[in-house]
Length: 338
Image 1 (spheres, rainbow, N blue to C red):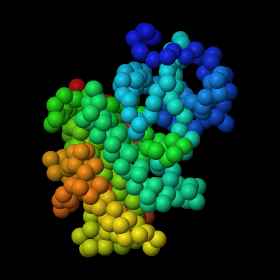
Image 2: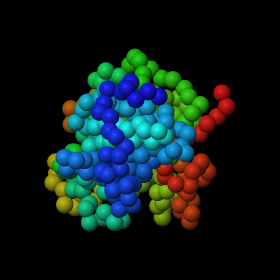
Image 3: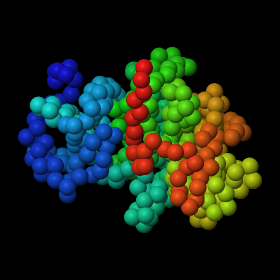
Image 4: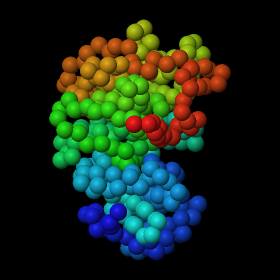
């Protein structure tokens, strides 16, 4: 892989080593799509996030190239910005703008972040920002991209709590409004993958729509789809939301005691949009321009249908009846013979 093929600033390894204090544990922000991410300070004092590819990783090299080629050509306020990269010997590093408020997942269901619970106006702002970023990827960007691993952990928040979609290492480009393709190399995260993708490897923009719907329902409920458990039934979060909707009590997903009347209508509309996005058939799901219109109250709201992955849970073990490939909620890759 030649370093000069990328139209981005090239950082020296020594500079990034100094910036991250030798990749110290104190500077570690977490695990990214393919390896650790560290906080760093450049010579001019600018805060950055540095993602370091493990030298023993096989899949990371392709994701590294993919991330640079895609995100360097994408410019949108709701997409994370890449500042540069480093290739030196076996080292591969990516440098991003620093997101001080970390990932949306921490605010949705991390116990340590309960004191930082998002109020509805802020949460609704984040939901709409994710939708606008996804619309750009699907329709307005020059590349037209299917993200393939959209999840709450890949939604980063800047100082003003604006959401930015990150981790484009597994993204794919597509041509045409209804383009879809199949793959034998599945990449994604359980709980967010659409049924047609997880079951048959079918990729389309509707795969991302399903993932967005899961994020929306998780954000509203404050609960995680995978591993969700309810004392009264054995369905996952999507099934629980669907059950409440049919019973006319879907507001139980959100604590509405402190909301104004117009905010309650936004919550109801958002939940319904989320249920429309996770419908089992991709043809039944809206596209992102329709989602944005519905969230704003300008689009027609259809009736939801039974969601995909209407999975029963075993509450004693908090695991799905279907055995997962991984024991952790992390990105996985399954390689199958061609």
